[in-house]
Image (cartoon, rainbow, N blue to C red):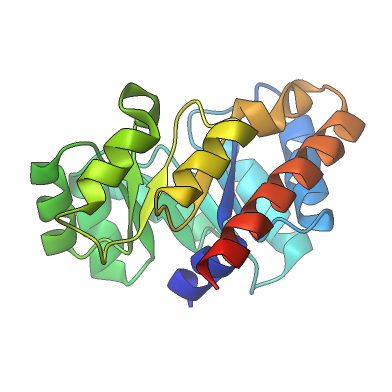
Length: 211
């Protein structure tokens, strides 16, 4: 169940790489280090190929998502490549097609109106994007009328911001460059491992705070 995995893992790693081989190695490194939810953005180089290779290596049960999904065609191609999760930057055809297929979808929202629309559309979780516009204070304010909805802030989330968002009630955080660095472009995997450990520690603290 994706909702349970999201609440347990509390971290979605977002890969948007210029080098498909490096992006694939980044996915595998994250999985080896204990990240349970990985999103490969369709705006990265040969993203579908990366998803396909990663699915073959990780097996059928790993949560491997396609990001920057905007159209029904994106959903179809991502699912064929092996994605069992989709993340969208906003509402629209991509969300609707995921719901139609029964594919878990984290739908991009920013305003209360979009939150209401995403809930009505059947989104599995809500990607607060770009979260950096309002920060943790905005998330806290947004949760007041929607306390039961699972928000995942994305955009400019470093380790300190992740801690603050989780404290403000986020179910998880989505993290791109502050976690991935240059790993998906052919950079340092040891640095990726160190940053992964830091983020996993922050997310574990957040989980303890909810217990």
